[in-house]
Image (cartoon, rainbow over all chains, first blue to last red):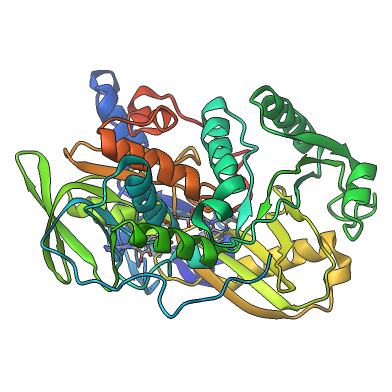
Length: 91
Length: 403
Ligand SMILES: Cc1cc2nc3c(=O)[nH]c(=O)nc-3n(C[C@H](O)[C@H](O)[C@H](O)COP(=O)(O)OP(=O)(O)OC[C@H]3O[C@@H](n4cnc5c(N)ncnc54)[C@H](O)[C@@H]3O)c2cc1C
Ligand SMILES: [Zn+2]
C-alpha cells in the first residue's frame, strides 16, 4: 500500500485514490488542425518509463482533488510536483 | 501421460555471435515460440533470442496458465482460436508433455449486465466457430459443485459462459519445449544478455547493443512483454502501452477438489487447481504504472475476499506464495503485432494480462511477419496503425479478468 500525499488532505492510503496516468498531456490548442497521427499521439501514446514518472492522481474517496506527483516506478518513492497546487492555495 | 525424463541440458548455452539474420529480444514464451516457428516453418535458423535474465523467468514463469479463445471480436477470435488449435497438437509437435488439460473455463455472470454480455459473447463465439455454451445457474452448480451460487451470497451467480476446450497447461514445460525445439533447429538462446540500445542508421535498425557487446541483425524483433516501452524508447519510439504489476498466488497442496477453471469478471478473481494440487488464483493489476516486480497487498486481499464469497469451502486454505509480473497493457486490451516506424524493427507486445494462452499463435504469426516483412493476415488488424485509424479491437469485456 502506497502512502500518497494529497495536497489538501495530507498523506492517505493508496486505496482512497484513483490513478490518472501521465501528467502534462495538454489538450491540443487547435484540435481541428491535428493530423490523425497527431491525434493518435494525444489520445493513445504515453511515456512508460522505468524510473521517475510525472503522473496524475485523483483523491476520489476524499476531497476529490486532482493533482500530480513524481513517482519512481520501481522504488515507488514519491516526490512532490512543484507545479501541483499546495494546501495554502486552496480557498 | 507420465512426467518427461529430463536430460542434463535441454539447450546449449552459447555465447552470442557478432551477427544474426534475426535477433529476438526477450526469451519468454513469445520470443521462444517465435524463434521455433521461424526455424520450423520458415527455415530461418540464423537467429538469436537474447534474454537479459534466465530463459522464461519473466511473465512466462509467473502466469496462471489459463488458456481459452472465447474473445468477442472476429479478429481476436481468429488469432486466439488459431492459438488454441495449436495448443491441441503442441505436446506432440514439441514431443514434450505440456500437461495441457482442456478442463473447461467458466466465466461467471453476477448481474443482468454480465448475463447479457456473456450471452452475446457466446453467440459471437459460435458464429466464429469457437466452442461456447451458456449455462444457467443450475447448470453452473452441476458443472462446478463447490461454487456457491445461492441467491443470498454477495455475488449471486446468474449463469456462466463455458468454453469446454479451454483449460490450463504447465507453463515451464511450454517454455522448455519451445526452447529445446528452437535450439535443436540451430537457434542460439543467449541468456544473461540485456539489450541496452539500438544502432539505427538511415531509418533502419542495424544492430542491437547489449551487455555482451554489439550484435548486428537483419531484423530485430521485440518480445519483451512488460519492458517493451523501455526498449522502444531506446529506439526513439513511443507506444500506447502502460506497464503494471499483475499478481497471483498459490495455496498449499490440496486433494483434487476443483476440476475446471472458474473466473469472475465482476469480482476480479479466477481459480484453478494445478496438477500438483495447489489452488492457483489470479488477481487484478495494480492500477498505477510500476516496474517493481511486486504488487500491493490490498489487491490480494480484495481478490481473496471475492474468492471466499464464491468458494466458502476454501476458507481455511492457506496461501503459500504470492508474486507479481509486469504486464504491458494496451488501450483496447488487444496485442500490438507488426512493423514499427523503424525499418527492420518489429514489435509483438501488449498481450498484457492474457498472453500465455496466445503463446503458440503469437509465435506463429510473428515468425511469419518477420520472415515475410509484412503482417501475417491474422496479425494485420493488430498493427500499430489501428491507433491512428481508430479501428481498435476492444476486448475489455473478454479480458476483464486479468489472465
Ligand atoms: C500473475 C500473472 C498471471 C497471468 N495469467 C495468465 C493466464 O492465466 N493466461 C494467460 O493467457 N496469460 C496470463 N498472463 C499473461 C502472460 O504471462 C503474458 O502475456 C505472457 O507471458 C507475455 O509473453 P512472454 O511469455 O513472452 O513474456 P515474458 O516471459 O515476460 O518474456 C519477456 C522477456 O523479455 C526479457 N527482457 C525484457 N527486457 C529485456 C532487454 N532489455 N534485453 C533482453 N531481454 C529483455 C524479460 O527478462 C523476459 O524474460 C499472466 C501474467 C501474470 C504476470
Ligand atoms: Zn484529498
